[in-house]
Length: 198
Image (cartoon, rainbow, N blue to C red; front, side, top):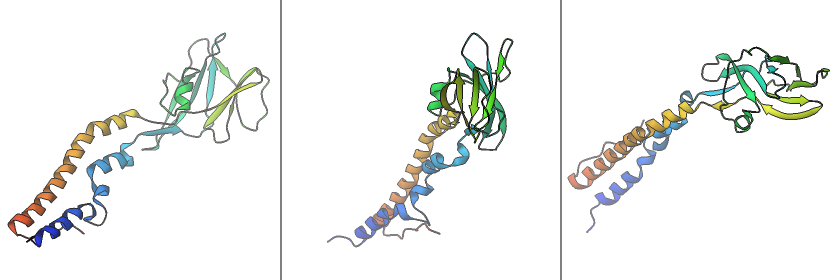
C-alpha cells in the first residue's frame, strides 16, 4: 500500500517554485545577477548641443566629439570617434573605438547646425537632430546618415555576469538540493518539513 506521505512529498517538491511571496525564479541568484540594473553600465549621448566635428584635408575622414552620459550615476564626459571608421559600431549600438576629443594639428572645424536652422555655405557640415542624439553628414549637398551618437552597454558588465554565473547557478542548485533533502527526510524519517514563506 502506498504511504500517504508520498503524495504529500510530491506536492511539497512541486511547490518549490512557489515558496515565499514571489516565485523561486525571481528570488534566484542567477535571475538577480542578469536582471539587476545596477550591474549594467549603459552609455548614451547626453543630448547636449556640444557636438563638434573636425576634418584634416584632403582626407574625407571626420573626427566627431560629443558629451556622453553614464546611466548608472548620470556622470557626463567628453568622447570622440572617427567616421567612417566607427560607422558599423554606431549602426549596431556597440562601443566605438574612442579617441582623444582634442583635434591635433591640421584639423579644421566643420560647421554643425541643428535641424531646422539654415544650411551654411560650407561644402561640408553636420546637421544635428532636434534631440541632439544623431546627425547627418552633408557633403556637397549629398546627405549621409543619419548616424546615431554612440549608445551601448559596456561589455565589462556582461563579462562580470558571465564570470559570476557559475557561482550563482551553484548556489541555486544548492538551495534546490536542500529543499529536496527536506522532502526526502519527510518521506523516510516521518518528520515535519519546515515550509518557507513570508
